[in-house]
Length: 115
Image (cartoon, rainbow, N blue to C red):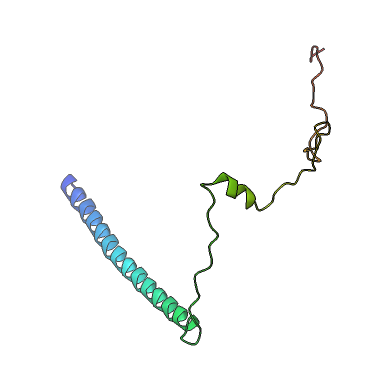
């Protein structure tokens, strides 16, 4: 016959056993992950050392372009895609509209929309 006390002992034992199994399984899984990670890192180091063997010279640092962010006048002269406008005499204005832009802005019709 199950008493309250035996029920509590049964559930406590079950929870304790489950927690112990979880703890040891987690420890084993983490050890396996660590071993796999170390093996992977060792394999990568070996592959990298074979790629950069002593017969190949070490790659030099790439040349860096000077930074012109502090000087707007030099920054403008180093624009990667400068826009060259045709010289205008004041009367002609260069067209800077894209082919997708409307020539005349849209104006809604006045009046009641629901009639």
